[in-house]
Image 1 (tube, rainbow, N blue to C red):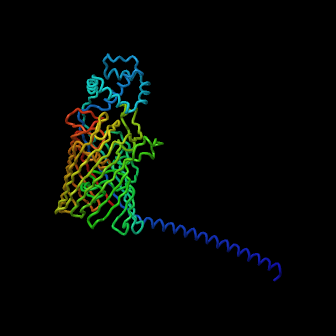
Image 2: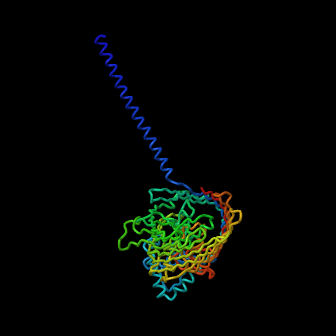
Image 3: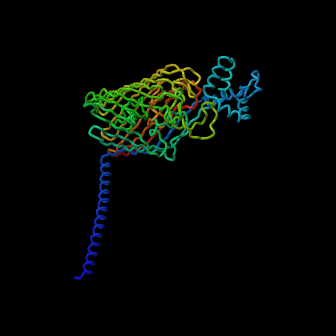
Length: 550
């Protein structure tokens, strides 16, 4: 073998070794990538295995009818009062002569002829200015009473009937549960609830509490097709090696007992649904006193007064609206439940942050220039509010039954806003008021083990109020009604997790303002009464639904 041949063989060997090394490196890299993908896939599967999924899909058809009694249009009254301020202001009407009689026609005509100036006046006048002017005029002008009577005649509106012959809704709820650690668990629920053929969460405000689009009432009120966070909280058990737990996050504060009976569901919320059916963020510290008894201390924040409100003067900023209470399951077994919920809301505001489509400007009373979605923010802290409720429910033979008694009491400060103060109208001084509500129900289980017949009744007093804007009632929370509600239903399980329900619910209102803590409740039979927005005197709904639970 000569020297050249040796060199050539050496070169070939070196190239082969280099190529082999490169190939080996490439193979190793590919193997690592493949291994990473497998690990990622295993991690995803592990997460999927860690989360337990469930939920239900409900499709429902409704027929809704109602009767609005004759009333005095409160927004028209406000428009005339505000317009009179403008009409009699010498800065805008220097030729005004107090000796010359005038009425709604002259006020409307003057606004129309001086609309640009009226817009300036409207922008410069607050509700406080209007309230001071009305107070001064009532005290010093002997003709003010007669003028208001004339305005009431102008604002008189005839009653009418409503009839939505068919309304379809779809509700989807996805439940999530996961074990985070030995003593820590996560629970969540994502929900979507919408009417067929509707695509916005913010509808036209009609005076009902559930037509103000706030964090408190969705997704319990149908709106758009967005999947929203209904519940999200963790629970840390066995604190201090005791049967004590801490839970933080978006609370299970809706659909509490005894509201689950009529839906043929298990208990779905912690506080009693008779006084709290309200989405909020907060905390619970619970103590399992013994096997069938649990004591819970609960905290919630209903209104954050600074974040999201812009740069707010520390001296004029509103206070946060918060509540604290106790929920006591005194006895909780499959056969019998004794429960009470007691809570106080502190520094409650005249509404909550949200979105709204107002038909009228609440300060000037003037019609809004179109269905404009605006941000709604509270304008005042109105005082505190106490609520309490007690429940006894039992199963005796084939009959499930329950009885509840509920109580509310306002503790106002002397403040009113454009919509009023605690249980008083905008131009009044609030006084403490007490309300009550009784709610009874029974359900008969047929021998086939699939069909249940139910009947429920509840009645609320003039000053009754609860926190239930998220109630699963299209017409407004039935437990918030200042009047009488009767509901009859039949449920049938075609399969253990496929349930049909046929129901009829009837509302007979005795007083205005059901579901609101602002404004003075007025007896509807004394028609026509002044109302910011027309209120049903009677309403009814027939519903047929199918629910697939998984």
